[in-house]
Image (tube, rainbow, N blue to C red; front, side, top):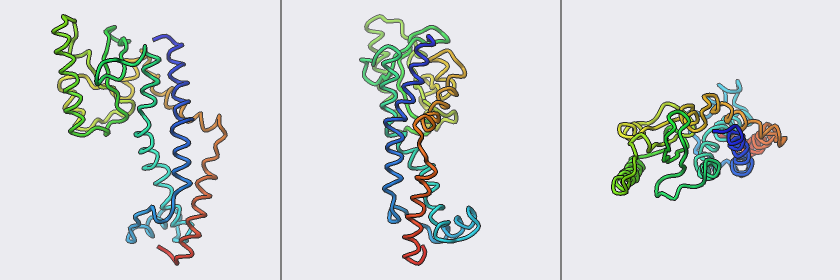
Length: 236
């Protein structure tokens, strides 16, 4: 892959975070209310004390907000919005595939063969039904290739996982027949650059700096708001 295409992917990644991830992340933070939390009364005071050294309303609020805004909320948003990035990626690699079940097509930078790839967000993001669907699409494509006398190998049909390396058992079922490339491996096959995965992950963080987003203030404002609500209730 040419450097210009790599730069286009990096810029596309920034735009993806700028338009699809960050606004949703901030919106989810701002709309958080105490009623949104399924509080375990046996754990929340312990977690507050473990995190902050006390169980004041502010500490309780931090124990609620931090895991949500830095973990579960963002992971959900990323998973739901990933198809946007995959669509942009397909345009850079040569246009969206017209084949059912295939997200992108590209020439593998390592073996020089054309790959037909279904992309997934992360290492735990498919279930049993997804496995059946993916294998069905690939089997259909292999059958069509035989009818059309096309030289298509099993290794030319792949699943590309955008990040991670410890794949779920569902991915391993697919990997017994077709390659599943995840994280560093996927991006190396696509770009030919073993370090591209790290270049891409870095630019996602750069967007926050470039757009002057003060996440810490947004979080603390929400902590203060929930702490006041906890104070009014007399605790959790």
